[in-house]
Image: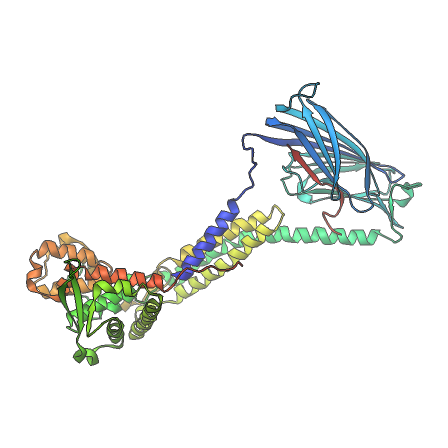
Length: 590
């Protein structure tokens, strides 16, 4: 149960993490950049002239926009000019940690007294960059981000135009390639157009030019080595790496369907039940003579066949009461005038008990005083961590003892449930890995890994919680055993059936109560008995007294208290290529 809860917490954390978004403090306004036009002119002196146009659509009140232009070591910017269509622009420049920060105030009036609101504005920037073009011994190069990954919003489309100093021998590369729509090199001009680019992504140009196209290139960066082979290697490594991860994330998304396919094949191979010669509608009598804890292990909780639970533990207590191993009487509490239910121990019958029954006996005996146990005090005793941990260890020993009484292979073929356990655990592990990798990447294809990972986690946890006999199957003996006990449980729950076929003696009702507890329907059996035998207390029977004075409820509550107290809450600790070009940066509105 604890492992399943941990898996559920992981799932909820991942789903919550996948839906978190950064929201603007002013959620009554918004803006977008529908188009960006970037024109570059590479001069033969190495100077790079940049013209930018950004088409803004504002919804709400704004004071202006800003543009951050990153400058690498040795690079410089000058001749900055700004104007706008649809507003009056005022530029304010500053330098901030390697960035040229351009703050552009936009006004709706010539007097510069009113900001803008609910309008479309085109903002134009132009500037010159020095030492951005790099000249090697064998080639000239320009690596420039036409769109940076630091913008506050994405862009609907980029239109790029690059003017080169020469008409021949030029090569260009635009990356990431998934954003390319059209591009062309004609003479000394490159043109390109993109799809929409989301926030956090970049779009970069790499141009290789003949070194002979440059003359007196005092505005370029000079590197005294050959550069072409190095540049192409770095580019290919980066592109191949990006393509590898794009493909990998797609494959991760597709791999998520293997888990349900595996589950279907497992069911078809191992999960279909054998046909048996039994077609009973209900069972009035106990189908077998097995003790209640064994019936509980095989029938009540089919998510873990063969392992008993607390309902089986309590059914074993009731069975020991019926065997006179435990005896009950009531005693009035002097403080409350209420009657307490007192349990005593018959040591003479201890040697007649099975190993699992002896554990039940000794577990309750541990909390007794002078051979008596006040059941109303057991809850408070199990609220202490030391007592609770001892009790839970006894319960684990009892579970193992009951499991040892059962030759599970006679009843159940668990090959399918074993396979599906491996599929679910593997799916959970890979789901977490896929989702984590998807969250860590900036690639859009990471969404495939996130979606596939979350699907795998949900699917894996879902099949973990399914009954074992969905993918495993009963043997012929086990199938008849299961069907008979299932029909007996159906009979116990249905008062109309009991009314038609009432038990012939009060002894049968005792068995109904005991095995009803093992099957998880004790309260229903007790209610039916009160209807059928309204004078049941006249029989002076300990089993009836146990129910009448709330023994079943007291014990169940005490067990839950012990389970909780044994696991106190505690705090725990936690657990050069693409994109290297000049330019880019980002911007936004304020």
